Amino acid sequence: MTARRRTFLLVAGVLALAVMLVPSVALANAGVHGNYDMNTDQCAGCHRAHTAPSSVTWTATSDGSVHSALLIGDYTQLYQFCYTCHGASALGAATNVEEGVLETRANGSSYGVPNTALLSGPFGKPAVDGGGNAIFTDWQDRKVTSTHDYFGASWGAYGGGIVGLKAADPANATYTGSTVPSVGVGSALIKMDCGSCHDVHGSSNYRLLKDQVFGTAVGGYDGSDNPQPYVVSNETGYPVGGFRLHEDAIALGYQPDYTTAKYAKGAGGVTPDPLKGMSGWCVGCHTFYMGSPADSVSASNTYEADSIFGNVVRHRHPVNVELTTFKGPRAVVANPASGGMPLAHAAGELTPTNTDWIDCMTCHNAHGTTAVMTGYANVFDPTNQEPDSGRGGVAPTDDSALLRLNNRGVCERCHNK
Image 1: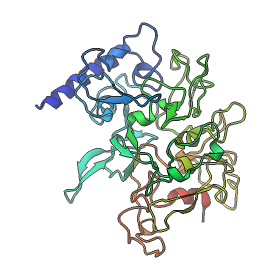
Image 2: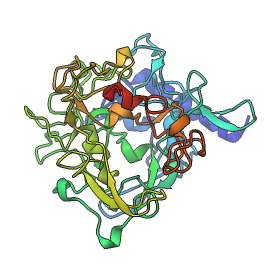
Image 3: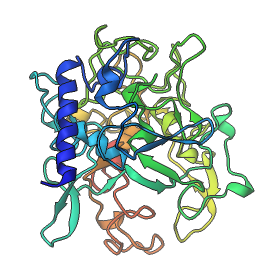
Image 4: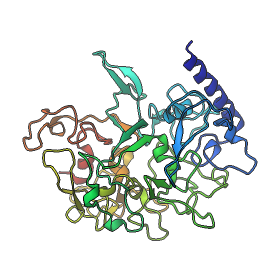
């Protein structure tokens, strides 16, 4: 047995003990991920104040200074530590994000349908295909074809700017001459790991989504610790207004659902804010992918997107807009239970209607996908539409672009062409 394997088992054992001792462990904004009281011992489930052996670090948003995460174990990347609970062979959390499946909890309960795909999709576990090639697969041994980076590598967000969407004036956020992006991506590289998107200690947003990403405010608390979230949910008992510090949402009736899409429109009270919601959160990095007005003519910017067309005006699909053609010549296939796409609903509403919003999660998985791209989706030269002439994926990303369905099934579900 290797030293790393022994250490993994030791850390897994420590965290498994925490699972048994701490109620509601590993739930969003509860257990080890929040709801800390003033004399909590939950910190010890992950950290050592003076003797932490892990080299994993975190960066302060205020001044960019780097600090030790003080984690148990000899891990060098954050995702390795997270997989101690959320990995394919892990003890503890039922949310197996490595394989993208909800498992049955130790006490027999689950928040969602056990042995069903997680809403976020899989990052993938290491495997080998029939040709001896290293690949990643999900819980059903399907090849994972694209993921958000999560292993500490530097990455530039497609359509991204140097500081993300300006929270104070998002409609006018734009590049300047000094911040024109490099080929295909934002001009500033982001170190991507689990902590790039999630705050493991809790946040005002749905699913521990951070209140600040890439220097951009996308949630948070006011001076009286009242939550100011961007992303909320229609799950049973979801806290009105977002998660409060030191408040046990689970004890108050919150029931997260990890397998059934219950996305809500952008936080904003009676009138949902079209610049918030999941899409408003994502453009903290993907700056140009949402704007106002939200139509594909005026919603455009000039930038390079790693294609033969160069630095030209790029148009984008509108997001956070109502499906006004929902009841057109043929009804849109929007119900996920019927093979459709998840939509953002008004508060307390889950039945698809023509007032639902299309947002980022309508078409994409957040973590990864097993969707495949063939035919016209796999074209080497977009000016010469020869099916299957490409490099295995979709230009410009050369992969499945985190899409929920094969090829352009996400388009046909709404457009019925």
